[in-house]
Image (cartoon, rainbow over all chains, first blue to last red; front, side):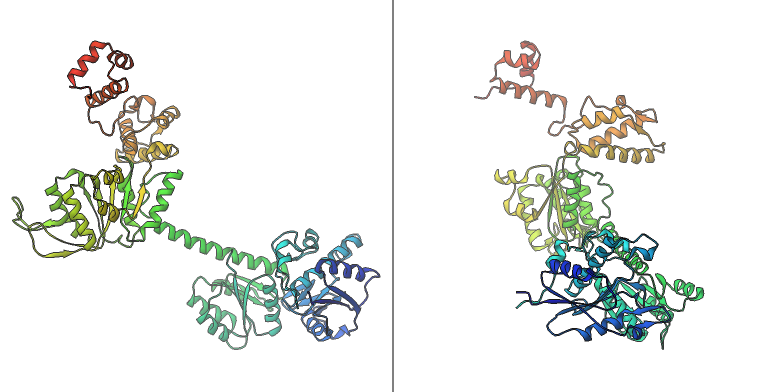
Length: 179
Length: 446
């Protein structure tokens, strides 16, 4: 029996219905219990004025500290622009086979690229990013299958190319805790 | 499964190391980190990495100095330099010192992925290059074995697999198929290649001559032995002895040969001193040795001693697709040796060649092409330049009368010596057939 549970903690404003939709999709993909709750953090301490972005490494550590007992996997959801020192931006990151991760919607919206708002596309991208980061937390590395959700994505167009499902190989590689 | 690429990250900033570590781990690479150049060089003394990703600006030894030291240790190491303080000068210097590439922090995720993928390709190409180089070395001296057919590729594969061992090899195949070339290829690709391959044509020598040839002789051993002479086994010390037409050796020689193969020791004809020689034996025959063993014509123990590996060289008629390549090869060979411009082959002539049975195999084809170059117009080999009406070699029959005698005997046997039916089949009249029977002294079996 799987002992895992996933907790999604949102920080900042997310549109009504978005998180419940994501919760449903994640639950369907991982077949484990998923809980969603709001979190409160003063994000200014993670802000880097030099880059005008938020330090994803420090946020990741913070999520680790906030992980609730009983929830073996905790993913922090943000709507700020994330960076790590070596990269100009990231959509999210997680510890491989670890207990915490983060994902941001900041760069997933069409409007950011001067395109017409498309909520359907946005939700689709977000669910893929959340499932992708959780995949890392369940022990998966990047996959070369073009439609697998674990395929590495640099641009939103890359995210659009893949599905929100695991390929058979990745699905078989998901490392659940059992009792 | 493809080999996992290993990456060593060298950066004094823990956050950079951690970020890169996580990024590469998620991509499935094997990753290790060092916090400065000194630690990196210590790690590199005991471990090797496919890619080294190093910061330029580090306390103590900087990245450029470390790059030089890594390159001194391993010339082909792939080192990617990174820095947050990019200047053209440092970039140029890094590349001059042998860096694979140069990247400015922070970099676009796509740039990093591209860079690592390119480095991965470089590693793959270098490894492929190494494998191909080894293959080239392994298959040296096989350029005379021309062909792309499945049959000849299978022979070359067997050559490759048997060359490194010390096993005895019997090469079977019809006359003119290139058995000696195969033997030479085995020798040239074996650890014995720096020592001689000594060939003995057993069929061309009488028993006593063969004995003297193989074992050598002492001065005065027989009339004409005016000085000591090394035998072929002695000459083949550390190398290979190639015994062609092994099926023709006498029973006495078979016994002698078996003893030498078992002990690798022998005595020269007329001598007393035992001589040792470390040789590998490769034999060739166009006969079916197994049948000869069954018929008691060849010693079974010698057969099994020799036949550790059997390579069967296919006749030309079983590798027709190689004919154009062989024709091209022989044209080049003979046009060059005759100082003539390269000739081509008329398509109709090539087609005729491909339809010809070639009982004399490649040797016959080679002779045919040589003749066509001599008699041809110097530009194109045409059908009329090729003696396709008659076969040059016909195994088993030396002369036309031998062929005629054999054919008449076969026809008479087929028609149970009924003269009328046999004459009709042979398309001659009965008188002619009677004359031939008389001429060849043919007698009806009782």
